[in-house]
Amino acid sequence: MPYLNVRLATSESATTAQAVATLLTDLAANVLGKQADVAAVDIQFVDPKRWFVGGQSVTAQNFYLEVKLTAGTNTRNEKARFIAEAFAGLKHLLGQVTPTSYIVLQDVNADDWGFGGQTQGYRYIANQVKSH
Image (cartoon, rainbow, N blue to C red; front, side, top):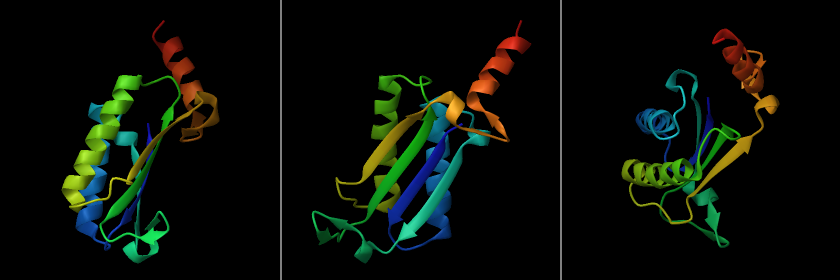
């Protein structure tokens, strides 16, 4: 499970939203090894005139992607690959983007988050008990 929150400084489009959701879900599964069926992608569109870099309104499209991951479940190399492929994929979908389109991967302690009313820490322990 990851939670992927992306803000896009571009015109709102259901087609773009679906393409971004598909891209990020695929990368979460194929690069980070997450279960695609529980990857949550939250997309917000922002008017590019309201996005500033260095105090100036941006003229190209821009994005900010924040991904919450269970701490200790991904290597440094996996994270670097995800950032590179997500940047390239979003650039491909959106067209010209500024280099200041940020991607942040944030490790969250397994006991500090979960879904369906169960923490990730609980899920890990429950799976260990089942396998013995």
